[in-house]
Image (cartoon, rainbow, N blue to C red; front, side):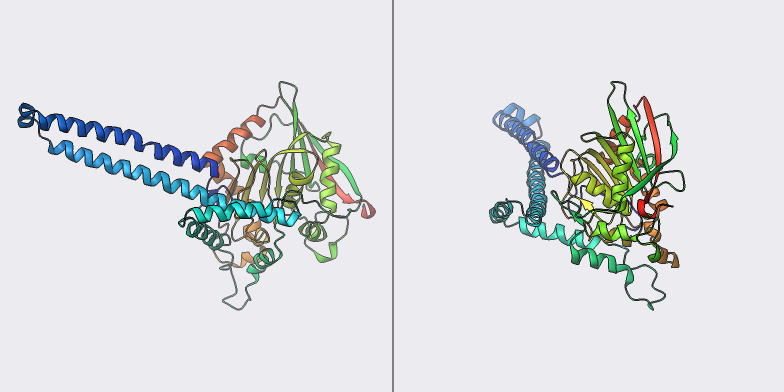
Length: 432
């Protein structure tokens, strides 16, 4: 990978399973016209051979060679179609296993039926299990590429950069399953508006959306209300990451602190999560309203839980360096930017091997900082600027999913009015 961008449907899944099946069917269907062409050539050969006057004048070697080549193309099409459909089945097994695990975690019914379906699929074709194993092995090998090879003071440091990955894999809390809800209550929030503007339009690129993070140094949240020509509205919310890592600040006025990090990672309601709900309400967003979320770091966990459990219609989520990933339905476009050498992202355990979100959803991965330097101690791959670079790479990509994202963001650019408000939040009992 080494800095090069890779776009996948999620985890071990390269593309949407149904899209792959459609491709496999189209490739296999090519065998039919090839067979028709081969048969037509064979009929022509029979006529020539049976007609003495033609047999002497028309050379048949070229026709026989053409028939053989076309027959080879027919066989190749059939083989490629079968293998593509088989790969789609392998993707489905991975996704069914993830779905069964989610059902088991949340206590919902249906896991045994899914596992039985997997067993039937594997029993029906002996080639399937090795393909599933290979998919999973490749995902496990690549999900933390570059993480263990960061600066280690010439071998004097322990493998500290792998600690996040170990925690994520062992705890298995890095994936927010459907039906998951944050527990407990958070501190009350004191919220104040620090800046109000009226941008000419909504964001039209991924990098552009990420650059709409709060501009006021004290603001952690920005909410935009977009109004369209038909009178419809939707909200875009932009969420900064952790604002203080200092242990002495835990539980202080700043909600985006390590206390909130620990709470959110442990699936507990945090002050930062409550602050976002309060900001959306202050901006006029109500239950059922369509919203999109762009978030970095800690706020990626907030975005995940907004999408999974809030009363809003979350139609778009874009996260960068999030310690958690949500498992969403096909009505949400989910874009995840992940640097495989990012310690914070590694807390997700590499996310899920299955896909999440709509068929156009994707995970864009690369090594954020390939060079092993002392700056790695400052979590260089997790910083905002490298993720902006990754967003630019997505915008420039011709991958169909990146193109679909551009089309979605293009609709935000059609807003006829945008009301933008930036908010500063503090824990109310510590309000300064």
